[in-house]
Length: 175
Ligand code: ATP
Ligand code: MG
Image (tube, rainbow, N blue to C red; front, side, top):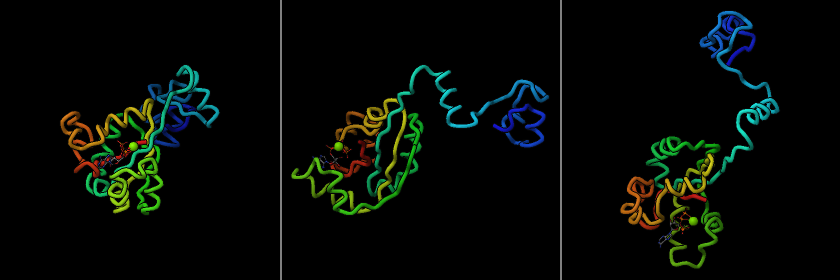
């Protein structure tokens, strides 16, 4: 954003800044192109003044599963951003079988539990925190149905339809 005194100071001190390049006036004291808050308190006050009430930003955990993480990471992250999510945090990780078993604890005892946990532990995943209003529902909808083949028929543009391989290797996780 650059100095807030005006275009003259901005040009002098930060010639590449928004205020140096885009301010409509020519002198200090004239209209500025942009204003940035000085600190978090100012920022919170400014947000409250423009938007009524708290912004309903929601966070959701997204994981790109092994294989897909190496092959299609860039395309999937592009798609995520194109759907208006902010990627608030991102981490590449390799999880042990024990870590995956506790992550998918709710499925322990089911017939696909061993297949699922061996697969997720088989290679690096990309874990992300996605943020936007309604993030949880919106991410599940972008992923598509759990089963890759059902995704291909019912939601052909979804991530699981496009990048899933079979019933277990379904590209992404959401929670
Ligand atoms: P996830 O929890 O990975 O986001 P989900 O919530 O859509 O997926 P769950 O029912 O929680 O679906 O199943 C967890 C994962 O277990 C699925 O994503 C898939 O990889 C695997 N899975 C689920 N059902 C089956 C099945 N019938 N056969 C093989 N694998 C399955
Ligand atoms: Mg699940």
